[in-house]
Image (cartoon, rainbow, N blue to C red; front, side):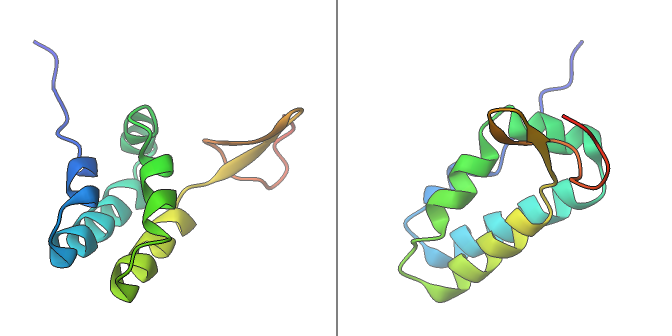
Length: 92
């Protein structure tokens, strides 16, 4: 039986700003130290959802979203940047 990971991303679009702040903070905690969870959430387009919150009307949501995005490592690719591995030394 496969484990189904519930994504906090639906809460990123919640009408209540506190729910959006909570969702961004939860995503930060989930992706901060676990590469497997990070890859799983990236497969659910979590980066795109966090980027969309950068234009939120509530400052706390923007701050938390920015903090979550800081935890998403990126790597160089020939056609631009992709997410997944840190930039340092990894040739893409």
